[in-house]
Image (cartoon, rainbow, N blue to C red; front, side, top):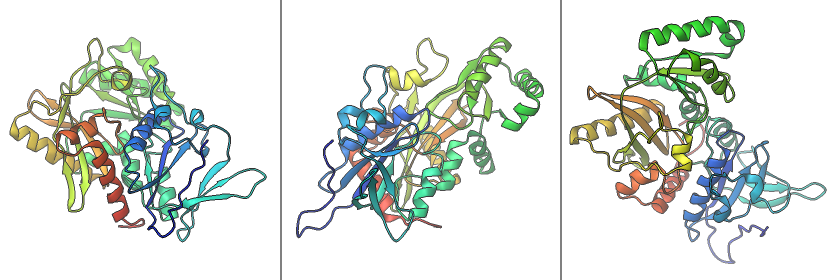
Length: 384
């Protein structure tokens, strides 16, 4: 692997060092790697030095090849951080001392090598152990600015139950749902099944059974009747001990991007996600393995467009978000917007919906990456 260098030429001003952090321990590891490749390709190397750091699926932080092509999908096969290291060169360590922002590589039997002084971390991590406030907490302890939501907003955005509770408390409409927590399932699985059955009696089939803290539609099952419920619960439990059961909300799927500007958050033009052919909902394969393009901008009236943009910013503020958010809504047959969820680190390849919505709003992909880095550099860590 080519040795990384972050030292500026003699007599020149040092460029900010961006650590691009990706991969991770969640089931969304591969999608994170794909996202990192797109960001790595777009970062302006005349403005920033970049250090690509991958987190392996067993949780090790490693220096990876600065090669976006190796991070791309290979057919239907997702890339892995382990494939991006040409040799085992030791673990990457970021200091938790806020007076010391150095990043070092520790090798067995050798003195640790300082790779540079970190100015900002760009964590393109999806799912638990990355998008859920855990990495954000580490960076807060380290005193290192980072792109995206803080600890609280990241945790709220990852947990579908508490996300809905926050939205409801701020007057945003959410669909009917129930939660089955781990202790309830362990102590009274029969009672939990009965409670889901009563929920279905009240709201009808189909139901959607989801891991409470996963993303990219992983682990979600549409259940059209009682026979499929047990398998759906088992599938959700493969990804999370807490599950959420949601009733169907009839309506069009509308998405809207929110971006932090110096004067405050703004919303993009909205997009619509058409229902994929022969599929019950917009699942993982439709998002990442097949061509299911969104419609940008969505075919909405001016008043509907203004309303969904207003609600997207309201959701951003309700969860105390920073940097970026993709807010997903249903537009019901009665003309009401019901919020489904927010993503504090949405899919971020050039063909993902968030960048597409901002491109249609006049901000291209490379500019979007730069704005997010600049917003992070303007912020401080700690209480704010």
